[in-house]
Length: 280
Ligand SMILES: C[S@@+](CC[C@H](N)C(=O)[O-])C[C@H]1O[C@@H](n2cnc3c(N)ncnc32)[C@H](O)[C@@H]1O
Image (tube, rainbow, N blue to C red):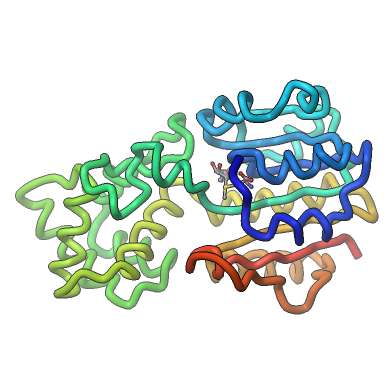
């Protein structure tokens, strides 16, 4: 079982109660759901990736299954899915954004810049039509620049976009190694931080992550009880900005002025930020 970042803080912040109704909008490997089930809560778990849902059915024990409903779906549709499954109104919703380590290391979909021979796919759901390979081989230089700059604020976005156009004029980009070569040529030397930002930017675009986050937050605010809470764990400053701006623009209450952070672990774990939202 995967132990997610900020697990204790989320469970405490949501004040998980026996028989309370909760939506785990990013089920993943079930770490949050398991912690809520252990407190006697009823949980609706959602994940866009069918593999995550199928694998986790074996992890969650039989005794807990009666209190868990697992659905393959997009949290952009959270209001509809929750209502269809009689999870309305709910005591809490949790979003733990991004990918799980298992998806990065084992899915074979080109999420990691270290897996040089994997295809440039990057879809969380294999039902999504768009892939990273399509974007890299079909967008114009200006469009590629926009994807990189808007989703990652990488300062070398222009040079990288140009290098991709040059490379694909004689050979399509197919695998992770092809993209790494373009980045290396554009910036002159290997740089893991640039790889990370460019890969993240493409993944965000393929999976429409910012749009889904806005829809998901909007839906979550519509299904929580008057005293319910929404917990959002982000790993990207632009996502955190969306959460903050969403709360302000919708007249919701941000319960902690500054996000709760994580001081331990690897660098991506240290970038985790927890925001808590409630109705006013
Ligand atoms: C960081 S992992 C969650 C880990 C989880 N909290 C755990 O304890 O194992 C994020 C998960 O959210 C899923 N996901 C990302 N975007 C989604 C969306 N729009 N709708 C539903 N699930 C999504 C990913 O497939 C991934 O499994």
